[in-house]
Length: 618
Image 1 (tube, one colour):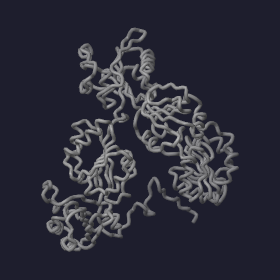
Image 2 (cartoon, one colour):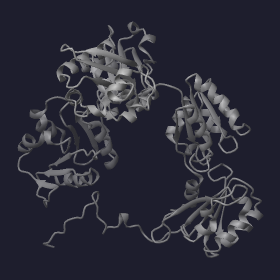
Image 3 (tube, one colour):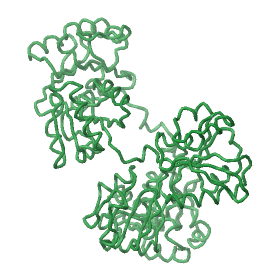
Image 4 (spheres, helix red, strand yellow):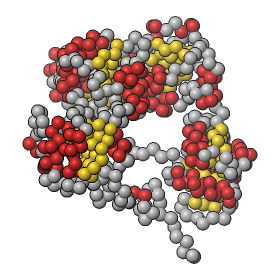
């Protein structure tokens, strides 16, 4: 996917305004500056003689306009060209002293509010935003669809519906599916909104507004705003050279019968022999969705609900529509199993529908990295998951107990330090079977000595849905404590994360002595008990005076850190009686303050920092 770049035009009228405009132009990639003042021109800076002419020729050519000057000039300049908030570019006005940045039109869809806040941070200006939803910190209903890739349908005029919402009328939020958008809505529910997870559970007559996110066609007597994520796969088989228009009309009618919004269809799938079937190509083009085909071998990987011997003889598979929809959806179940249809010209077709597994509301397991010890180093995503979990199993010997205080009322919170893996799985099974949210809370980052692969093996065998949330590792906390960049130009460009060979053998090709040849920044975990052995191996290649840091429980309240030379490693460990929870860091990068990066050098130019044109007259 190509990079999405907002095309911004900056227009200024005074010498003070030019200085502000140039500051903003550096911040907004590929923006163009127009001014009525005398200025040295180039392809991104242009002097104009007429603002009216510029607006007439270019107003719709940019995603946003930033006026720098009096608000009255801005309003009079754009007035003849304003059409509709769904198509107009965002317009922002900044006074020529840079004190105020004001969204003028298209605050939501045109992103004027967003850009206004960006400008206020760049200039330290006061943002002026007047849209009610933003002032009340409510959802911007008119931009939710664009933000999350949904399609939107409103039962009444959208402005009327938004008015009900910003006036805080009783609202029902029905979330049939789950994705990033619905997670955002759940996290930010206003106090006048009640949430439901099916239409059947909601008595819509008790509300003045209904907001729905899912795939169903819903009808209520209440103003309704429906959002349709691309969450339904449509699998189909058909007779050869079926009439395109007839098949499209029939599929549209069938979807209505099944109460499925066609806006929720993410793609249409069939057998590879239908690659050139015009009806499917036309359907995909009409609804701007992919047409995906599968080989017989691929289709046969799915055990279909309604196998057909006839289809097997003709095509070599037991079912096309069910198998195709299941493959697209990564599912083994269907919302609608194979259903037969026939066109007015007597040509047959079948279809099946599946909900994409990624949108399904079901039990889930989050393997969350708790961070290095300081509870504030937990990620925001990790915090949100902890706050909403039904069951939390945490490694109590390595994870701060304070993190579990985030658990909601009624959640099960258990320390797994004394449990076997089988005992942990007994609890996880109980909550998973009930469709609950489960967190396995690990120290640091789960991918680094997290002992998670054995758990994931069981999850895979059971078909459990799970995902990993990264955490701040102790090696990163070590770098922060030491105020060090572990990758210094021409000193060390490689970080090695490893451990010494103790009771658990190391792979033959990962011996510490072999890795020491690189003299990279080496962060050694789980090895304090064999410090003497580690020191001997490192000294084979690192000089004795190589900088060393020994960090005990780094970022915890009782952290202790010793900095010295590699030759002092064993003595530091012995003198301080360190036995566990220690990170050893060796390398020239520790505390280094030399060798500047080229990234910010004034001679280094790139797409975000362009080479300034030299005035040849000087």
